[in-house]
Length: 386
Image (cartoon, rainbow, N blue to C red):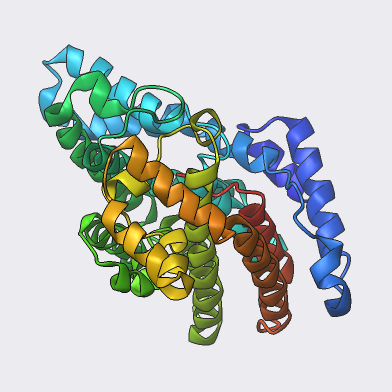
């Protein structure tokens, strides 16, 4: 049934549709055994090829709609369309997995949450557009984040503000945000849960902007213990998933509360993972430079020093953290090595995974467990990226 519905939509390849049908049938035909949950799906490499294909299939249409809508009053300035087309491609539409994580999680969440018989071509398309709305928001935030950090590398290339200049890039963040809002309004204004969806959508940008402000402020080492307040990874977990619930007309406050708690915990882990990723992985792998130490960012690594470092380590840390000097950077790295921060992280990672598996077992029976196993595994293989 699902295969016929999706094939009629005309924007997906039959082979990909067949793979989705087989996967959904496999997942729906077996109940996850609680006692096997921590082991049966441990750190799977998930196949999101269908979701990615579906996302890319709607790009030509929504890109033209964005440009038509945003440039309605400037049709006599033709070079603007070419310029903004390039902006949309470079910051958003040309990206691939894992930088489509919010879009992938939107589509995947909807397909898992919606009743099987309610998945229509139109609804599938809406889930893809929802994913792009969130990706456009994130693109806006990434452009201004790169400006604030004076990033030299993004996606293994020059960041947008280095390509067009800081002043133009600042204005482009507003264009991207406006594009996300106009696209969201165009496609979801008539949905019965539009106000709830809009609340999630607006809160996403606001919460992350405040998180960005907190992140660039200066802190003493003792303040690092407030690390959990600085999480800004909600756009790839909490808001897309909860908005997908509203898209599927799931409004039960009990279910939304359970999902919010799970996604908040997952977002905190992703922030810790990102801190470690930036400190220990080369730029060619992270596809961006990481100025956490040189700019004095509050990180999980610094929090460990604040909590467990010796007085001498704390003194050296305070004297050198936030300095963009080779000697200072080396001293901070030495502290991390002496404290075996990496080994501590691996233990934290294992403990977190097992605790989250236990949380999945306790979710309300109305929620599909497989979705949350998938989100957890996606996080553990470092696929939630901006």
